[in-house]
Image 1: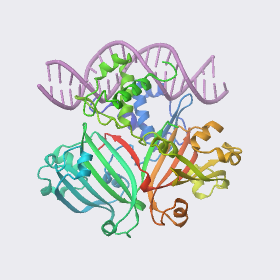
Image 2: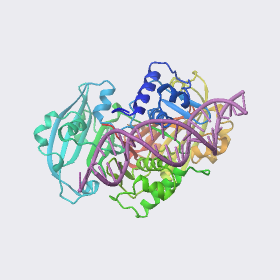
Image 3: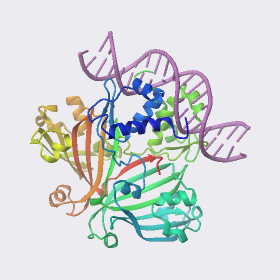
Image 4: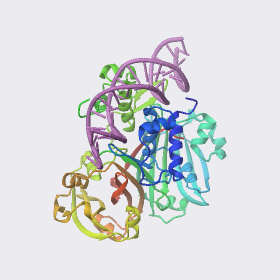
Length: 238
Length: 238
DNA sequence: CAGTGGTCTAGACCACACT
DNA sequence: GTGTGGTCTAGACCACTGT
């Protein structure tokens, strides 16, 4: 019961045992009672760790049968909310941004609705082009409340992962994100920035980040589809 | 403790109270102890129901503060795994399929790897064009094991929602799905089937459905991006 | 400080899958 | 029947937030 929860310890331990082949694909994990004993925790804690592995797509749990290993590859799936930078880094790319531009802006009708504020509310918009291994992969616009990030324009050169930057410089974190994923054809400007032909398919993500009950960041990201994909693991349902 | 779990009862009750405005946007829900008393259940059960509402994007939970209502709109988000048909129906479209074609096929290298079976394993492929309000929205290919769906070709006219069909005709259900979402430009054939220009952006979804630890269905779906989007709600993380 | 959610325990009984 | 995960309880203490 130290700083990190017990279920995190159990989760990491099991993830490692799956990664190193101690539990192989198609094999059953020890049952819940055995896991309780192995790690000296209660069933609640075991079940929390197991459900995290399910979210990772690493195991499958079936009542009456047991828990089987599906894969030994740690996947960078989007059930957790991660920045584009972090996702690309985990895939082994050398990640960077270029053409960072920070400007003040007043909320138009679209932004006012998204943030649920008055028209004209003072916002800051951060434009960036994401690079992986030297070539563009995505263009992003992030909108923030001006009052939340005083003096941001002067610090723009320090922005690589925006989420990390906001946390370190301003102590801003988010507890919930809602991603809306669709696609579009690149227009002329987007194509030039990304180095592709106009009309090429782009993945679009609109991300609303909540601090508490308030939308405190809105991100519009367009990603070259041939260089990126999202993985979502779901269970139950029809 | 009847057929439906208690947390489902609590979840639905709270969802209704949010939908009808008893708990309004920005307001706090009763705390966990109060909810225990209101519904006569333990804290574990309350927390399970609350976590389901978080997954729906309806509420936000903050330690030390409480549980606040974010929205009163029931969203059709993709944290639960649903068929395209079900999602479109919930949006109020009049849904159908056309050009259903069922054929036997032998696993090629790609399919053999996806299903983790030998090259040449006997599969069935179902081709369909999804229609909403009379116009095409998506084309889908679903691959199944031939042995799992004997005589399927003769029943093809009864397929509307494939998932419902498989459940009712063959008792097939899935306990896990892994969706990989990206985008592409429509080629000539796809454009003709969907009634769009070649090159138009399409959302692509590769869905692996698991029965236990085995991939038992693979779906390749291409959706007109301007008519569809995915919503994913996530919490925590960086 | 008081009040909130976050974590955890020990134990119980139910529902499902296989033999 | 036996063994698995699924649900649930009652209670405890920790960590964070605001006053």
